Image (cartoon, rainbow, N blue to C red; front, side, top):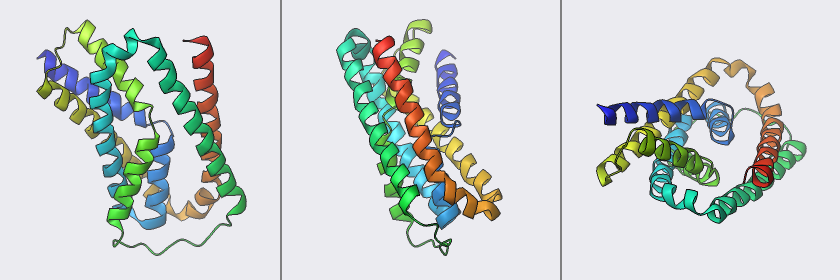
Length: 210
């Protein structure tokens, strides 16, 4: 019974963790509007597979990271550098790339969208500390034993929760497809601002929370 509760909690924790606008869900939304629903779903699938692997890594490293503050600090500093690089990328993309016409939707590039989902999720390292915290809480509060099977099921629930949340983004943004031009025009600026905010939060955590 406790195991089922942990898996359900992991599913909803992953789902809720992706709801706020972020790198992955906004990228999926842009792909959906630009190339169609199928491309967005394949991108979400690729990102979810990476989350599964990240959750496995998080569980395996949970005790080690919290017992070694230096490792935790280095992970945060790596994330900070990635955020600043992404902020510059989105800013200059928005500044120098003119708004183009909406592309014809095609189902012939599903594998490319899938790989893009994997690539964008790999850049996002924040699920690792997120699931490290979850696995630590479950292990201490519920005396949950992470065997090989339970680690896989924990990670699978995390991936499924992520995929459901991303799929909701696909469905939602399809309903505002008539506003795609406005969205495409300002989405890169929004992403640049988001990366800056996340970088500032990470910088604050590095110097005041570690």
